[in-house]
Image (cartoon, rainbow, N blue to C red; front, side):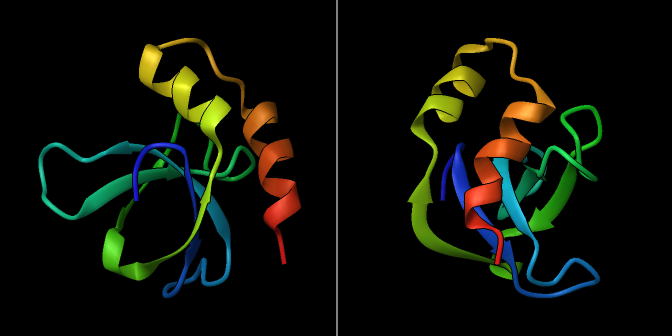
Length: 87
């Protein structure tokens, strides 16, 4: 899992929800910050333990490049990109 990876929540109240990895948590090993563009926006990402996320090998390279370079990304871009992965 890396920035720009599409992941699914395995546990918690958000079980089954699709997220995009926004960044890695530098303060605690094994945790990542995830967003979905709808409930969890870029302004309010959710910190999740990576063992509570399921990664199926799907990435969004365009959004990953924007996030790593610091280019502005909108919640609507994330929401529309993740719509294809919703169950």
